Image 1: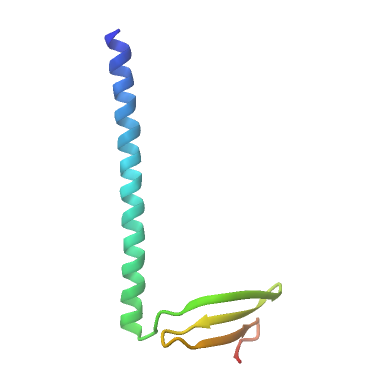
Image 2: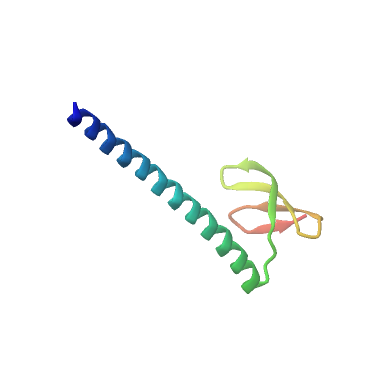
Length: 86
């Protein structure tokens, strides 16, 4: 009987430990991504721009609507030949 309980205890410790390690690794990756994005923006002077809408026109072309930090919206058309601002 002791063998069954010790075996179940070992399995429980392994699964809980693996879950906690995975959770910690996910948290570290998420925080390092945020820190890297903030550091890149501070070093290059490029503000944090968010994509509001994306519409595929053809296979390799799309129309984007971006939200700038000042609250203004910017429309871009991206294709193989380049990017055009509307």
